[in-house]
Length: 276
Image 1 (tube, rainbow, N blue to C red):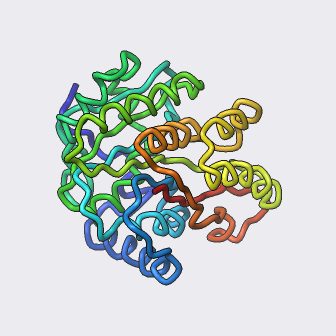
Image 2: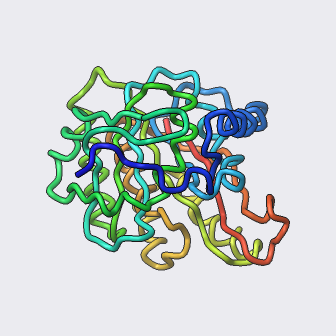
């Protein structure tokens, strides 16, 4: 596989040049800072992945908690929007292109995680067009410069895949006690419902996150998959965090695309959450 993953949505979903992207990220963080809870650095966060003007105001609430932390790596788990496959696709080496410069891959950690499950494989095509991981990088690269990433795209979001990835992450990280790794679950919530319906559907996901209930969330997703496009990644990160000793989660912010566009007749839901 090519070692450098080229940006797929820079210049369209977010500014493609350093200065305007920095200004946009800083503006979102400034708007979130006054309401962000001052707690110890989270072990994991949930953040949305739509265009920056839509999801950035919400994602900033999660990243505001991480910006003063000394993480050694960031593991990003997102859903596949373009390629259908079983298992999880890892980008195990090289770097990811961003307007802030290349973000390196944490190659040793990537190998350690991949070694925990035969379902974690190299699949470059799953990453080529995928925006769910890339949309986390404006915040990661700006707030945690030089900190490497482990990019993971989940294919079919089956129960065994989500919990299997959570187990693999927990085992891989537990074997590296000197590391301080941030887990990121990248997910939007319901799509193209009116705002009232979206709030009802999304509320189910938020309740399970707040309850730190990976099993309950997976049950809800199996009954009604439209709750969240990245529900499987959220389950995986909740499960990994629990196995790593976390005991609490909190929803920091909820909004929908209509808060930006003004159109409440067809919205996408967004949430930010943190796990300790």
